[in-house]
Image (tube, rainbow over all chains, first blue to last red; front, side, top):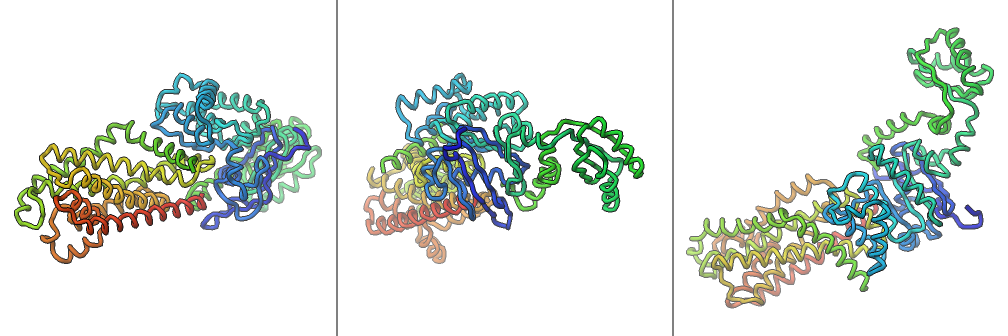
Length: 338
Length: 258
């Protein structure tokens, strides 16, 4: 990573509203340095896919600017298209065509032909362990094989920037691990910049050098996985209460818990309380004592090292799984997934 | 320019695979016209005695009707294929490559045209084997096939536009089943115009299906009326251009909705 080179991807203040007043992006900023793997992490409907659609020239923002590989996506979409590889959530390889034919067609669209095309296709088939299945129609491929073919399709013309939109969604654990290894290998390649979106916390943690957490159409926090987790000093203590506390109970608990020594950022949310503590093991008895005095029964207590889920909770103000469920629900109400 | 042409050919090849690699699909599209040909050919055999058909046997009269009707029924489902490509993500994948946008659309048109031409020729040959006579010769048959291709282009393009616009299978199925039989029976497919009730004849004059039948039937007859052939053929060409233009417009509106 060198600071003198222009960013591989730079988006400024992207705003996009779909028909029916669904705000997909609400001031999205993304900067990706060349040669790095950047992860956009967020629940369904947070705006990750819309961002990718704009950066890959599929969709146009209502306002804001974006450049990819140095080209403006609105003014020179054709230059952007030559510089990028796109692996969408469903890349739609032709089911009646063979793996090899799919790759050949994709290569021809970028102007590859003859022996150079054949060489490149053979290389990719080999590399993605598809050589054996190359002559079979894609409709007979397993989910993992299809996904590998999708990635190979995105790489045919040796792009500068590769977009991976939810690369492992729908894959079984084994295929998922294999895909992770493949992405690791890609990341090591000379100069290739990867922007990946995911709604799996562990995936972002494992693959990306930098992560931007996206919520409700904008980035809420950005940094390396370690720095994000490091900002949360100490341990995360999660308590589950026997019953939910109301508004009055919450104020009472806030007052009772916030002053305790060695504890920060107490969050009371329905039946759950999250606390960050300098020493998790020491904090548990103190917390339990304080809650007992307040007359609140505790069902379970856990102490953990901070995870990206805690990062998400801190910056988005809600739990990851809840945001995911809520986003899915509101999308269904709005009439379809974006 | 040559890039756009070669890209159109790549897109056409890709689509032709669906037809050539799925024998069941290919056979069904060919069996259906055969059924029409022999079912109606036998059922209405005697109507030719009413007069006004301009041919000696009913089969001779029927062939252009079945060719055109088949062109309609195979092209009106084009939107289903487009819809499938949208849902599968194929269209979006192509849109993020530098492929010419015109090539994406034209690949469809050329593919449908080739299949329609093939299907029309098969019907003509099967009818020939069944005893049909084409006094207009090969040139006349070529015009009939061309008229069928133009008509297919009109409905294929409209079906594509509908698929992109509504993005629902049910709408395409609904509109197609609603249109197929009325359009066919409000034409000279099975009955000579002089034997039709006059109100039907007037409606048929505005039915593009009928234009293709009139042009094709005249071209394969012993004494073609070139005025009929040119006027109906020209109208079909104009309609086909308009329909393709409309489908390209819809394509743009699809891109805005992505």
